[in-house]
Image 1 (cartoon, rainbow, N blue to C red):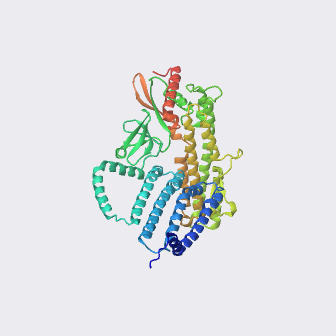
Image 2: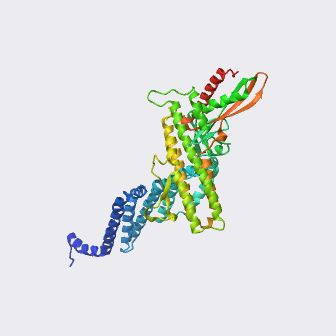
Image 3: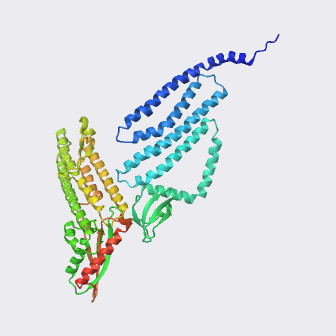
Length: 541
C-alpha cells in the first residue's frame, strides 16, 4: 500500500535536516560577521575621530578610499571561510572561486586608488622639497602607468582564479607584441625617448626654453609620446614628439636662475668721452627697478628713471614699489651674507675639531654653533617631550618684528613684489610657489645637516664637506647675496671715424613674470630711457 505525503509534510520534515546541515556554516558566518562588524566600526568610525585631530589629512584620505573596498573584501572573505564548513560540491567550488575572484577585483581597485589618492600625493609633496628635476616629470608618468599596470595584473589574476587557462592567450599576446612592436616603432621610439628625458631631463614643468629656431617655449607637459609646449610668441600649444625633442639642442633660460639676459646695441659719436658715456649707460640700467646690479647704486639712480609705467590713483607707483622691494632685498642679502660668513667660520671650527674623530663634548660644541646659524635663518629645534638631538626636527620660529630672520625677510621681500603694477594676477602665485618651495628645500637641507651633525657616525671626519655642500647650494641655487658678475656691462665692438659701436649687456630679475614678457618690457623701457638721456647729453648718433 502506497502512502502519499503532502508537500507541506515533506517540507516540514526536511527543514530541520537542512538547518542541521547548514548550522556550522551559519555559526561560522555569524561569528565572522560579528568580528568583521566590530573591526569595521573601530577602523572607520573610531579611528576617524582620532585622525580628525591630526594636522595631516593622509590618514583620513586612506580611510575614505578604503571604506567600501575593505567592506566588500570582508564580506567576500567571510563568505569564503564560512563555505569551508559545507560539503565540497561543484556549486560550492564555483562560489568559492567567484568570491576569490571578486576579492581580487576589489583589491585591485583598492590598490590603484591608494596609489592615485595617497602614494602619488605623498610623492608629489616630497618632490617639492627636493631639487631633482626628473621627479617633477616622473610623478605624472607614474600616476598614469601604475594604475594601468595594477588593473592589468588584477585582470590576469582574476581570470586565473576562475580557472581559465591563459597559456594560449600569452602565446597570442607574444606574437601580437612582435607585430605591434614593428608596426608602432615610431610610437615606441617616442615612448623610450620620453623615458630618456625622465632619466636625464634638462627641464621641468614651467621652464622657459629656447628652441633651435629661436622661438621661446614653456614646458607644459611631458606625455608618453609627445611633449606639450606653449609657444610664447605665437600664443599657442605645440605638441612635439619626444624623439624629436630629445634630438634638439635645448637652451633652458630658467636654469640655473630665472634671470633674463638682455642686450642692446648702440652707436655713439666717435669723439665722445667713453668713460662718461659708459657711466651714463650703466646709471640708466641700474635705475630700472627690475634689473640686477648693486642695490645701493640702484636706489641712487631710481628717481632719475622716467620711462616707467604710471599707476592709478590709490596704488603705489612703480618707483615706490621698486624702492620698497629693493630696500627689502638689500636686507635679505645682508642677512644672507652674514649667514654665509658664519657658515665659513663654522666650517673652519669643524675642520679643527674633526681631525682624528670627534668626542661628545666636541659634537656638543658644533651643535651649539649650528643652532646659532639656525636661529639666524629662522628655524629652531623642535624638542618637545624631551626629544633628543638624534631625533630632532626643525620648525620655523614665529615671526617677530624685533628679530628679523632670513626666512621672514624673504617673505616680506617677495610679497612686496605683489604690489608691482606691471605684474599679472597669476604672477603672485608664481612668486609664492617659487619662494615657498625654496624655503621648504632650505629647511629640508638644514634638517638633513642637523641629523648628520647630531649622529655623524662614519662621517665624523667629513662634517666640513657636508657643510661646504650646503653653503654652495645656498649661493648657487637658493639666492645670491652678491651679483657682481651680473652688473651691467658695456663692450666696445668697433670704432670708425664717425661712430663708436657698443653692446650693452644686463640682466632682468625674472623671466617668467608678466606671461614671460617681463624681459622684453624692461629692455624696451631701458632702451627708451637710454635714448632720452644720451640725446640730452648729445652723445647719440
